[in-house]
Length: 491
Image (cartoon, rainbow, N blue to C red; front, top):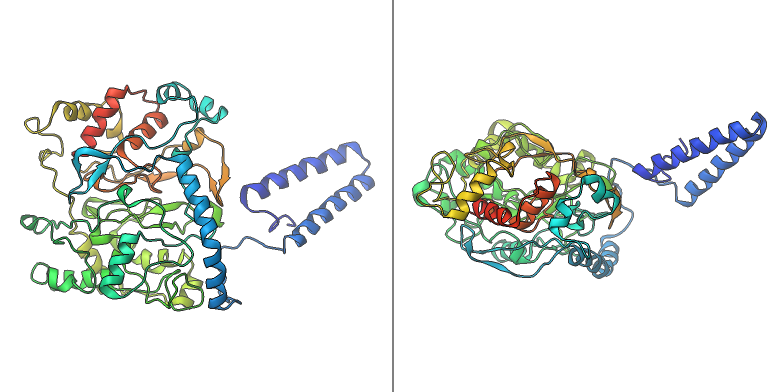
């Protein structure tokens, strides 16, 4: 079809429909010879436009044969970086309050302050209370759905790729001399809005030892020293493979890389720091074309032993599937062709994958001293606000419909139908549209894992409560929202 390649996705379909309507109108108005000539002329014009667009046709595959030297790529993309980052940071400032406002006396498991307050900005003249009283249709019609509740683009969505926080980059460079910095992009969220670094690590098999990280980032340099004598040999081998580096789309030895020097690659724990997360970001490999790919923030691996679905939208059924998928697909954007060029590492399912999965299944949630064996609050330890928050969680706020005790997940996927509230549109190269079905992640230890939702669009627990208050049409009072946050902080 002549429209294929002229414009991508939704726009192409719309243009095709407009042309079909126009051709039908010609049929009605003119005799056959005349409308046929006019229609042919119209399609020739479309063909000319396509030619002017250099004949680009959307493809599921990344280009393999690069006709540009690495030095040219480096110069071009380094020069473009300031403007790209300026545009993205302006978007974040427009959507959020990014200031450092820690909650008094509320800490993550390792001692880092938890940020407080609603950070998503509202349209001028609008309040949360006013917004909650409107129907989804009214919010969409008046364009009042907060931009911070809409899908969040990658810092450079047309380019995408793995992007690491500076804390991770600096520590890996210090320990291993390996550089995870990209010459074309920087990580976007400030340090105070992401998880503590390095995070504690807890094992289900040795709860008596507490945090086994001893304040260190676990890498190839120290994993053996820290865990020899605590893990069995198979688990120790699994951990070795989780801190071993393998080539990846942006970090490899070819000219098509985004590290200044040829790279050995990345390790699983470069994103899943200490088996938790540093919220390194990427684009999911499940969708095409590029503007329809969702941003994904690295999920925590804590508690994978009680989970039955893996990946925010992929619904992989075992941790072994997830581990193998990461190496075979996610590392290279789901493109096995480009993976062959850059050095795909095919893990052996029976030994390597199994050992990696066995270690991951030991990763425990952080201690929650106010919870009983049923995962609910011990009334003797909880305060009044936390008890009220629990009652809301299991009642009016409807959280329990998806997040069931004791680990606060139902191991299912749910579609929040956020497209009810806003119209699809392009934002910095990303098509903002409905999120589709998303995995119910466990809420145990949730205060350790900001920002929230699969793409990190919700910076605080207060943002998260406001989001669900609006999307589920709960109409919670301000005091009820405050109590709900108090309960979430002790999970």
